[in-house]
Amino acid sequence: MSEKSLSKKFSIGLNLTPDENDNRKLLEDYHQYLSSLYFSFPMGMQYYSRLGIKDEFQDEDSAQRLFNVLTYAKELGVRRELALNTYHLSDLDIDYAIEFTKKFGIIPEEIVCLKEYGEKIRKAFPDCELKYSFNNTDYQDIPKCFDTVVVGKRYLRSKEMRHQLLASGYNLVLLLNNGCSFTCPGPCRNGTECRKIVAQQLLTSTPSELYALESFFPEELTRLLETDSCSDQYRFKLNTRPLGLTYTRRVLEAYLGHFSSDELIEASPQSYGLFGAAASLFSLAKQFDFQEIKKIKSELPV
Image (cartoon, rainbow, N blue to C red):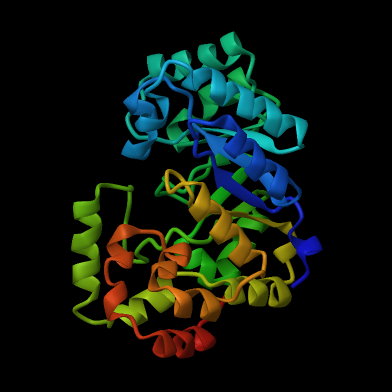
């Protein structure tokens, strides 16, 4: 797999740091591979899909640092992707988000949102790329106001499912490393519910079997790029928020092919979390058998 084939292919989450230079350095180092940088505005907890995100906006200059980093991303050719994909936002919440973007002069090139917010957001931002969030549960009736669909889980293992969405006229983004349960009906809930689903899966599967199926190794991305005739049409989203800049660098380096899963996991079992970030899955890491995982993965489709 050549790095050239991954140019402008990855979307990562913004982990806002106390020193904005840390964020700038990450963007400088990887901008040629980054399609977009997804982020939240500091507008309140109802807009955050991760509790840890609120900690990034505690100090009084955090909003200014956010705008500085987003401006720098645009200068480097990285598209700004506003996340409005939390549940139960009211019309007033959406109106406030729209007003906020225009007031502060950060007009995102992309917005990822839930199905029910799509029409309203499209009217406010007719020229942005509107993405159908992974947090949606219905992939059978996607409104035409959306340009792009973000998928994961079984779509990582089914070329046919991916091609069906492309044939319907949508762009496709594959969420590679979330590690969500394939049997989860959605919507995304709290960790307690995730653990219940995994406990049910463990009645019929070993921890290694679960991890092999629901994680996605760099070698599997290479195989997908080499065997899927439509792979040049895909972009790839990485779950990196709010997991920090070190995690973001490590997972990017891995998927860019700079390190193999063997190197990383043999050096530290913590690296299992790079390719299956869900806490409910990673919590089983002490029970994983890496050789069994590799064998299972070699027989799984991509």
